[in-house]
Length: 192
Image 1 (cartoon, rainbow, N blue to C red):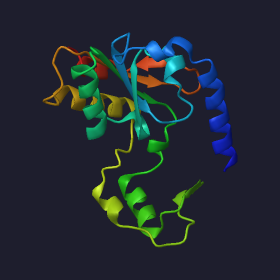
Image 2: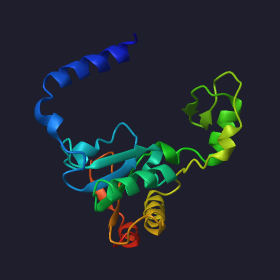
Image 3: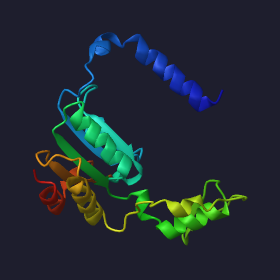
Image 4: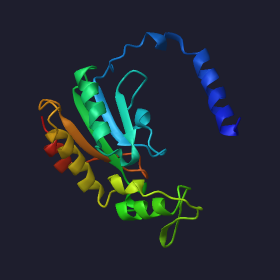
């Protein structure tokens, strides 16, 4: 076993010992909202949004982007589990701002090993083979945070399976202060 795996299983054992009445939490989120945000480890939606277990749905992916799968999750969240407000939260200093689709595709063609970033950008240091399969993915990179939040909120709002009465709010989380900063254009685009 790896050290990380041992640590995770040890932490889980301690958590399970005091699980208590959490076993009685209902499936629908108590506060009836969902957050779509980035997978960045510096973001803790439970803390920045004041959540306890059972409060809200949190959907995470690279960049907090409104991918087809994220929208699928939001639709399920509303249709089957009753969420009636959604937040799209991107963040400052996001790794999705450090590359383009072309850079990612080029790196993947060289190897599938982890790349490194340096003063001249991303560099593949792995040994091949790579794969051209990355050419068929829209990596949803970010050039401008406010624009990407607005684009994502608008994409969700315009989806035919998203009800018009669900408000969608757009924010940027500041990784230096912990504050949520509203993107007014996004919130306008997501107005119910």
